[in-house]
Length: 136
Image 1: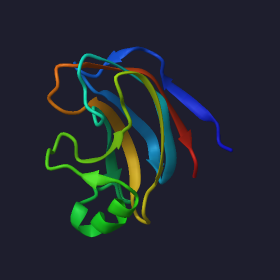
Image 2: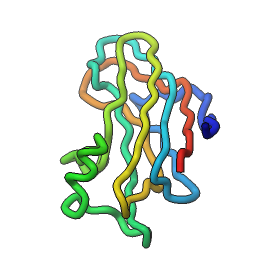
Image 3: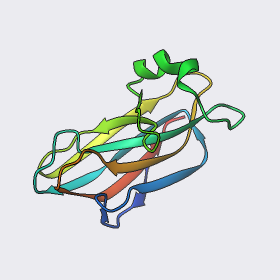
Image 4: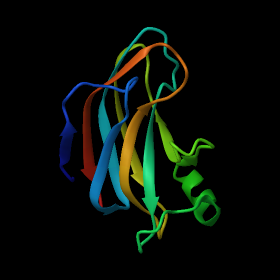
């Protein structure tokens, strides 16, 4: 089993800014895990991870080419260009842990990710811990 690599143990208020993590190389199979703390009213989909997806030559992936394969991998494309390709992370009021595995379709690599607050609630969402496990 591949080891988890802690990439942030700093408390980051996602209500203010997303947490941005570039990868040194494109990843095809990986997992993201961590801890999120919320205060105030937030929805069940208050947190998401945006993926920066590229092809083997480093060009940005366009949905038309791989949309159905990405949807099968539970990766969706937002109409908001700031979000792009994404997956919701489970969240609830208080402290919650998450672990999401990603297996991208052939020809698609993840060059980085952003963990961000989603939705217009006034609640506070903080990333307490983030770790990545490289599975390829």
